[in-house]
Image (cartoon, rainbow, N blue to C red):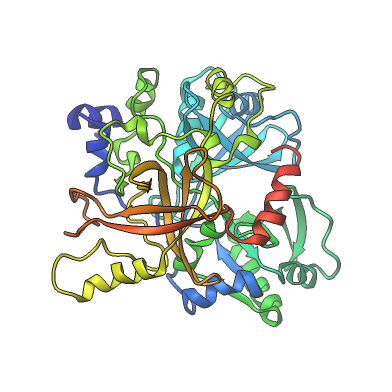
Length: 457
C-alpha cells in the first residue's frame, strides 16, 4: 500500500527534512532531449518558429457535470464572471492562508466541460476536492507519459515564434481568424478540425493545437510540411525546459500543503511520492518560510474578490500589505565561469551547473542576499542562448527589486543533502544583477500586455 504524504511527514518528523532528502527528481519532458541542438532550438522561437510537443510531460484533469464550474470557482483566485466556452485562463489556487498551492491552464471546452492541464500540484488539489466534496462533477485524470500506461488522451503541439501565423495560414489556406489572447478557435488542418488556444510560452506569437491522440501524427506531419519554408524547428526537452526563463513563469514553487492542520485530510489522501523534492541554498527548518503568495510571483493581476474561494479572506489581508516582486536575476558571467571551471581544478568543486537548465530538484529555492542580508529567493535557473545569459527567476523584498540592483545568489547546499542528484560540493556566492521579469522585451511589452487585458483571466 502506498504511503500517504501525512504518513511520510510523521515518519520524517519535518517537512523540510522529508523534501530535502527526497530522491524525487525534477519533472522531465519525456521527449527527445534534442532534435538538432538546444542552442539552435532556443533561437527558433525568436527568429522563426518552434514546434514544442506538450503531449507527454503534463497531467490532464477532465471535469464534467453541472457542478464543475462551481467546484473550480471555489478553488481559484481567478474570476469566473466572464469565462464562456472556448476560453482558457491561468488557474491559480491557494490554501486557507492565501499561500500558493500552484497554477495550471484551464480550458472551457464545452458547456459544463473543462480541461485542467499542468504540473500535478493543482491537479491533485482539485481532484481531491472533486472526490471528497459534495459536487455534481465527474473527473478523469490522464497522467503524463512517465506514469501513464499507454498513449495520452490528447495530442498537444505548441507553435511559437514570428512565423507561427504564416504557418497556420498556409495550413488553413487563408487568413488566421482573429482570436484573442487565451481564446480558442478551430482550424481545418489535414482534413481534421483541430482546436487551438492563442497564447505564447516565451513571449512570441503562438498557438497551442490539441485534439484526439489518434489524430496527432497526422497533424504533426502537416505542421512539419507546411512549416518547412518558414523555419519550423522541432524543440527537444532541453530547449523546451528553458522557455519559462524568457517568459518569467516559475513552474514549481513549493506548494503550501505541508503544515496547516486544515489540510491533514488532503495529506492523508495524497500519495507520498507526490510531495516532490527540495533543493538549493535556502535552508530554513520551517517549511512555511518556503511558501509564497500569488503576489510574490506577480499573479496579483489574476486575483479577483468577486466570488468566494478557499483563501479569499487571507488574500484580501495580504493584498493590503507590502509585497515581494518577481524579477529575473542575471548571473555574473565570471562567477558562473568560475563555478563551472571548478570541476577542472583540484579540491572540492562548486555544485554542478547543468546546461541549459540547472535545476536539480522539483522545488529549487536558493538564497538571495544583498549586503549580507537575505532579501529573497531564487528559483529556476539556466542559460538563454538568445541573450547569451545565465539567469534565474526570483522574488525579492520590496525596495530590493529595482532593475540594476546588485545581489548575490548562494549556489549549492550547506550541508550537502542526501538527494541522489547532489554530489559532494562547496557552496559559492554568485553575483547577479536584477532585471525585469519577463526578461525579454517582447514578452514584457506584448505577451504581458495581452495577459493584462485578456478577458476571463
